[in-house]
Length: 485
Image 1 (cartoon, rainbow, N blue to C red):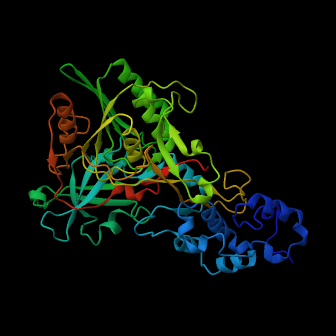
Image 2 (image 1 turned 90 degrees about the horizontal axis):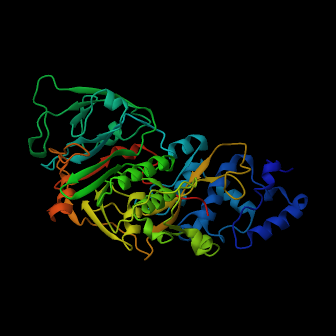
Image 3 (image 1 turned 90 degrees about the vertical axis):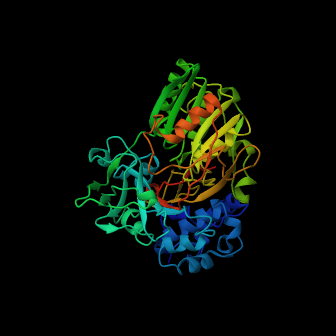
């Protein structure tokens, strides 16, 4: 008896990846009806087989995981037996990750590719309040949250939350290092919560001194925020300085980004400041597009090189694994590129992934000045893998909607470099004086402007430990999406 056989199952036979996979597949199809039942994937481990097969084919660290080796299982029956030893697909996946607490904390599987695809387009569930959690200055176990910014039109904005607010309680519970994640950074269990504002900064040990402190009720709601939060031009004497607060490298808003740069061109800006302090995810295509808008004179120069596992690297031409400066949007529209030879970025310890790839990618080509703090150092690219013969979204398995989003590559600049990016001028955020985003009252933006105008320098480091931030609530946090190669 053939177990779990269907038309789709033919495409899953002997899905053991090897250099002669295609030839092997043809031979097996030709001898299909001579195969024993052990050559097929039982229905109850169909998703398990998808997890193992996709990780074996494309996982960045496939060569470092013994159970993903092409030589681990000599027969289909052996692989089936191995897969049956895992309770569910998540348990299997976790067992295959490379140093998950240190290196790979982002690879995951979703049970509905429709939902994940929308999330990757920027559709999220959020209160709209983006915040960071830091320890008290007195080094006690207490922590506080401060509001970095609020998404326009969100529940947080409607309820009066503004940048710079500090809160020390959630749902009436004092925040500590031990409980803040459970109260704030688990969006599944905490879609709604109430914050209590501190009214006295108290030298970094915020406290509530009034009898009836201010509380704000917040509710998570669907939102598709525009990543272009602020764009404007500052006139500083003879200097025209463009400013862009860019929150996500979202490919759904490329036309809007092109319009922003058309305005910068029309204003004939002399310098450009791009604020990436709170930016940690997006698509490699958008990275290349923004690099092209900044310095269009670099057409065809390499901005990012992807290093996949040996199985992929050895079978792909170099150009397929590179992103270069272009003169057109993906839809064919001409880019309103500038020709800057110097660029200023505002950075923080949360600047990661797509944002770092842009900064690092431009560094070999033009002068790059970073104002703020050292970046996080995340240079991993991920791809969507569907349960089909080639893992693309064609002829996918109709019996489920699971999709994988594993790390598939490391990303470097043209010189092969990828690391944390130090600040050219260091200035940590002052939680008691954040100022207004997009205004010179924001000390870090003001430093960038003063650096351009008069060469002002700074070396002010943070005295706080940063413990977490609201972006951890999004499954797309620190994800750099690249097409499957």
